[in-house]
Image (cartoon, rainbow, N blue to C red):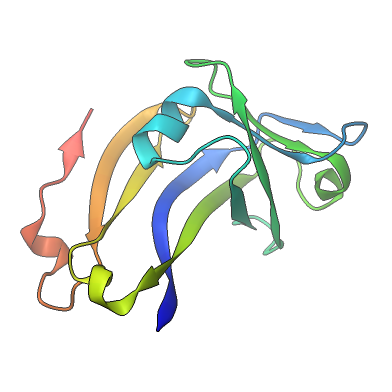
Length: 136
């Protein structure tokens, strides 16, 4: 049986630009992509913490170190520059793979730099309390 599992999350990122006149997608700083294991062209879900909007789109790699979180195309109607968002990446996984899986999580500072990294265990035999928090 396949289950949909969180693989990576960018938490508390600030939208730096909204570009309605673009084909679509979300542009994300390459540093954040690498830290979470997300890839260009991967589909992600976005939740806007300011207005509750949720949508799905694909990733475009932004310049490393730029802090860019750009919402492009029609989704630009759903958010505003300055909004805080959570970006989720997922994968289908066999249940037998799940106990060894960890989700890579990044918490952003006000400039979309990595403030903390976390690993979320998928196994029910581990707790978040037993995992190290890495302050950068």
